[in-house]
Length: 82
Image (tube, rainbow, N blue to C red; front, side):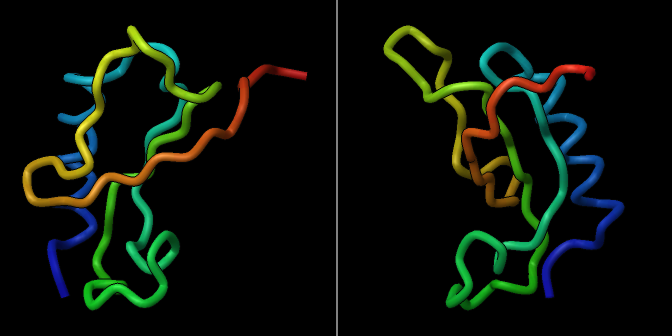
């Protein structure tokens, strides 16, 4: 087992402070196994990032690992109030 939820949450908050910019519109804590079911560290926590659209040339780069925590990305679309 990797870092505790509290440790990963603190790392996620630092990640948000450093990288939050469009098209990023969601950032949370999840399990590696949600993204890589057969990963040897599938029970470890990770950072889950949602984008409003696919990344394009000119968008800022986002790391796939941050302070020892894996970062996974998905396109979730725009988040709006109904």
